[in-house]
Length: 153
Image (cartoon, rainbow, N blue to C red):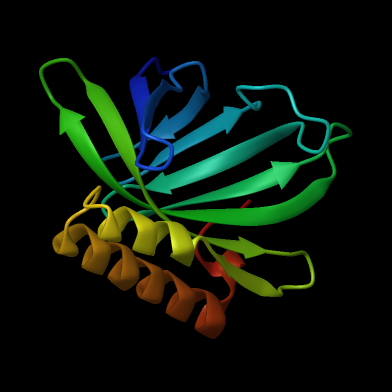
């Protein structure tokens, strides 16, 4: 098993969470695949698998219930920082997300948080544009080729 130090940084709420306990299945120069259980126990979600395409700017997760049955895909728009000396990845949540249901219905989420973060100067215009551009790239891929074209769950 690969051991990495991985953090998730959020703007709303302002927090940095150590997610190094996630099981790293694979790591390449462009991708980290992890299996995980929720940090805080939940009744609705039992586990998940995440493909983090950090250079592309998104993380695609497949969520399962406690019986191991598929619930939905969840796509986080992200940025990242890498500390080479310490081998530490920090994935930065750029607020907007996509939820895709089993029937392929797509829901865009958290635009209000993105605007709030920008209005309150928690993020710069550059980060705002990066979030929108990464979201647009991912939505285009999903609409044209389907979520399954990105990764093989």
